[in-house]
Image (cartoon, rainbow, N blue to C red; front, top):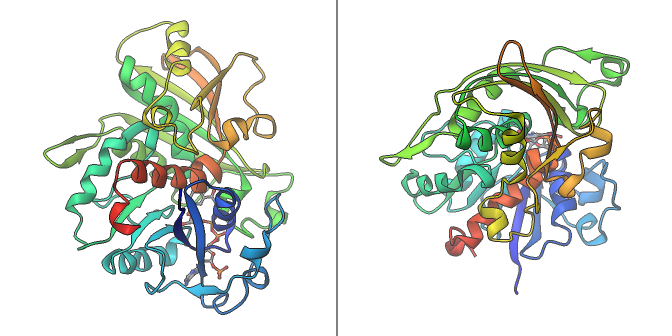
Amino acid sequence: MKKNKVAILGATGSVGQKFIELLSNHPWFEIDELAASDKSAGKKYSDAVNWVMQIPLDKKIAGMDVKKCEPVLNSKIVFSALDASVAGTIEEDFAKAGYIVISNARNHRFDDDVPLMVPEINSNHLEIIKIQKFEKGAIVTNPNCSTIGLVMALKPLDDEFGIESVNVVTMQAISGAGYPGVPSMDIIDNVIPFIGGEEDKMEIEPKKILGKITGGKINYATITISAQCNRVSVIDGHTECVQVKLKKKTSKEEIIKAWNNFSAEPQKLKLPSAPEKPIIYLEDEKYPQPRIHRNLGKGMSVSIGRLRECSLFDYKFVILSHNTIRGAAGGTILIAELMKSKGYLDKYL
Ligand code: NAP
């Protein structure tokens, strides 16, 4: 099968590098262009980047010229890992010029006509791109890295029992702040109980993702969510302690069964980045732990453990998901795979 050429905007950053790593042997997509800020544009990629991935930088990629983030690229499929301070306008310019932009940035997540996608949860929301204001192009977004783990755990519970309210406390990895991110003197031997804008995102994004489409519009789910977000001294993998109040009372066994049986369209379609098991429930009371479990399902599975009764809500449990794979580059590539298999990329190939 001939591979489809793709470009990466923000290719030098933490998420941009993860895109390069994950796309290095992708069966459907091939990196054709890399772009970043004016500081990097015009340089060879190896000179512009401080490569921090665990695989060596591929020679072909290392020798590519970094381009400006301007809509004159050859590849019509564009993955965006741009800093949010610039992503809004750049992504819109690309969409206006006829590109399909699949983005990790927060800027367009709440536009009424932009899907906020987790392929296992709301693949039907893709249909709203038909009403986007751009003539040929479109924007599709990936949620915040900590939202993704949370909604994956909530979706089977919402389907089977209904969710009334959620309280979540996160312990988020350093790589979530980009590269070079949080200064070492701030984070080593420390916990920082504040991540700008994160709590608002976690309280709103799940409602859009779990919302239903009626009359061509996404109606947000009516769940009450309270979030507290902390940065901890872990490189990759966000851990979240969750309490949940359900609409229908149920047993611990039924909840674990709902998680273990959860499977959705990406699994049915056997998309290349879809993990066989999107959710893995770990019985050992010490699990999940970021260093041990973040790479389950090649970083695309969400691990859950410690389900127990809660004296304030109904149940409490712990979630772990890889923030730069499932929570960013990997999740975005899965969106592109879903779009391709459903014909949404046909006009961009
Ligand atoms: P990062 O490491 O700071 O990388 C930012 C990228 O944006 C770099 O490639 C940078 O290029 C580029 N850039 C900055 N200013 C630019 C400009 N004026 N014009 C064009 N390009 C510019 O950030 P990151 O962690 O990879 O995050 C990228 C995006 O994904 C952000 O919107 C972030 O919120 C989101 N996100 C991150 C994570 C995560 O776990 N890290 C998870 C989900 C979503 P230069 O190197 O040339 O400056």
